[in-house]
Image 1 (cartoon, rainbow, N blue to C red):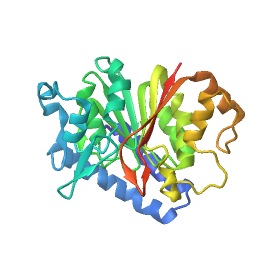
Image 2: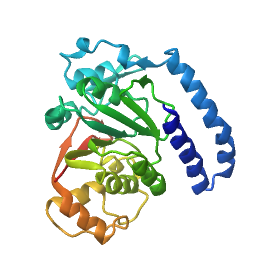
Image 3: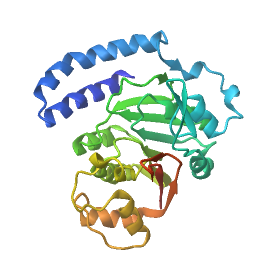
Image 4: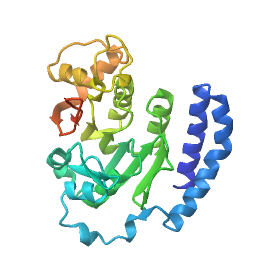
Length: 285
């Protein structure tokens, strides 16, 4: 993490606590975040629980399909991952990503993942998009277990609209691909989509993973009578009017005028007899 990006993340971590009136947490994080940055610096410098992707031979990965990469880096976007030495069947998004991302594969692209966590998805995309610049934003920006001159780490809290806007302004470029794999909360998905769809290049792709998990995990939708993100996208597809407390009429007009097409696919993970692996690909005009 560069000094500039650390300073951005440090200020916004503290700002986030202040906005949420978590003053005790704010006082702890003034020193705590600095300590984490120092620990992270030495952990990455000496490759302690961290992999420098630039030191791996990219030739070793040329024959890998995207699902092979997800499995290699133990990412839950693939068909399975390993947890406690057990194979866990996962979302199985690989075929959809291959289908929609293939036109970008050999191009020089910018990709942003919101909710990058330990960076397993970014590590996979690092080898799939060999000419890419990758940006990972997460509520814990010191969680990343991979590094490269092609990877940038940043802080974001997708529940805070001011922090989302701050990140949008900090990123001085637009993106070919943006993936939202963050909180999966109904409101968070909507406000994040509105802000970051504007950071997408023409003909770019905006992806929302696990878009309908709120059907099973009720805490992701604490709102009464609110239209869900997947319902909003279906309304846009049909050019139908809809009501949402989180979008103004101007916001809705922008989306109607700038979305070219929407594809909603279903992966494979079943929880409580519900498929929690719906994924949306939104293409910009």
